[in-house]
Structure formats: structure tokens, C-alpha cells
Length: 289
Ligand code: NDP
Image (cartoon, rainbow, N blue to C red; front, side, top):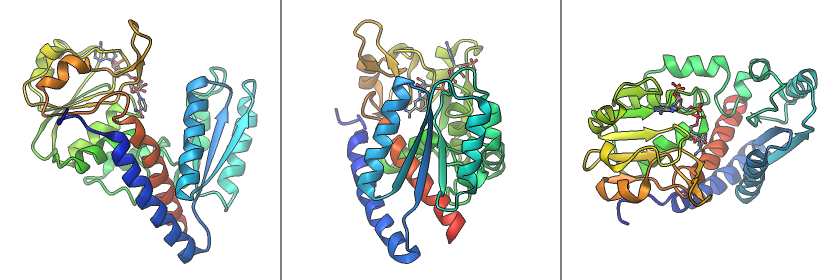
């Protein structure tokens, strides 16, 4: 399908360019950037994601140190590990893999993270920076990886959000809200929809750019989309009918109406780890350049 974005292809291109960039950083600074990933517990999705991070990092030549802590770790033990990573001058970027086990205070852990090393832009300092800035300049501070990927997809596909009527469905701090702000910085007119939005189909039909970050399988159906819309599907769900991976958008019926659409799997997903590695390089440069 011509209008269907190929995330794997773009991810391959980005990985090749990152490889060259990291090689150049090694020559210039005498070492490569180091990302440290803190994985607490045995959440299956997190383990798979972290393994994929390690593989991608090995391919591009980025150092990726994974620290695995048991499920029954305490707040104090995790905080001590975060503090050690903050202090370690061989570590440039830190990812605390979410979700943390339920008994651990995510807010306390995030508050302890050094904003300079916060690779996924989750600390209050980085969130505030994003809401203060008026243009998208990723070199100054970290923005969350998935929103950065969504913007990268638009850019690589020649879609300029300037003047577009965008609707972001979802208002989480890690996806919906940062995507909305990045789109606003790119001069889109943005509506943020959520579970209290009255008549979501009517809101969506007025959009020429839709970002779905809901977490509900095939929630956005063809009757909610205007002809020629651009649709970025961030959702990762299991299809209750087949058990297979699917997005928030009913791809089969929505795709024929769209000018451009990202599939699930193979759309936004492959780009997220690329953005993570780009963010890690940006942390390194902010600390050392
Ligand atoms: P959250 O559960 O934090 O947020 C979901 C959002 O969807 C909320 O703002 C909620 O509204 C809104 N929502 C829920 N039901 C409805 C509804 N019926 N109508 C309108 N809005 C609704 O999820 P995340 O933001 O963390 O993740 C969203 C999706 O993106 C998930 O599928 C997740 O797996 C995926 N994801 C994908 C990533 C990737 O790299 N591709 C990375 C991170 C997440 P309200 O605020 O009112 O509750």
C-alpha cells in the first residue's frame, strides 16, 4: 500500500547514520556515548524492549549497560542505584524502564534522576523545558522517545504539520501531551482528546492529522476519519479476536481513506529505539561538547 509508512526501512537508515555518527564521536572524544538502562523486575514487555535496546546499541556502537534488579527491590535500593548512575561520569544517559513494580514509587525514582542524563525526558525539568520552548530543538534537552519518533516520521515522509488541524487522542505525559506540544511547535493547530471528550468521532472528522495514543485495540474506525487524513498510530495492543499485535486504529478499514498511515506493527515502534539512541547521543554531547 503506497500510503503505508515503512518504519523498519527508516529505522535501518537511521541506524546506519547513527553508526557513522558514533564512530566520529569515538574519534573526537575518545569514547562512545554510554546509555545505562535500569530494569527492575520481570515485566515481559520491558525485558523484550531492553533486549532490543541492547541489540540496536551493539549494532550502532553505542555502549549500553543494563542493570537488572529483582522484582522485590525496595525504593531505597532503586534510588541508590539511580544515584550511583547519576554520579558515574562514564554514564551519559539513563533510562529507568517503566513500568516499575507496583510497590515502587515511580514519582520518587523520576525525581531522583539527573535531568542531564534523563534520556526519555521524564523529569520535571525536561517536561518544563518542553512546555517552555517554542521550536523543536532536540539538542538542548531530552524529549520522550516515542513523540520524537512521531515527528521524525512526519519529517521523513515530507508531511509538514504547519497549519494542519491535528487531533491527538491521549494525554499521557509520555506520549499524548509531548506529541501535542511538538506538533504545536511545528505550527499545527492542536486539539488534545481524551476519555471525557464529547463526540470524539466529530472531533476526529475535522482533523487532517490524527495521532492515536489511547491503548485500545482498533478503537478508531473508518467512519471517524475524513478522506485524505494523515494517521499516526502509536498504540500497542493485543487484538482480542486474534491475539496478534494491533494499534489503536482499525488499520484495514481506515488505511484506504488515508493519505498516509503508520501500521502496527512496523510503524512507530521500530523508530522508538532509534530515538532513544539519538537522545543518548544528545545527552553525551550536552555533557561533553
Ligand atoms: P495511557 O493509558 O497513559 O493514556 C491513554 C490515553 O488515552 C489517556 O489520556 C486516556 O484518557 C485516553 N483514552 C482512553 N480511552 C479513551 C477513549 N475511549 N476515548 C478517548 N480517549 C481515551 O497510555 P500511554 O499514553 O502510555 O500509551 C498509549 C498507547 O501507546 C498504548 O497502547 C501504549 O502501549 C502505546 N505506547 C507505544 C509506544 C511506542 O513506542 N510505540 C511507547 C509508549 C506507549 P484520560 O486521560 O481521560 O484517561
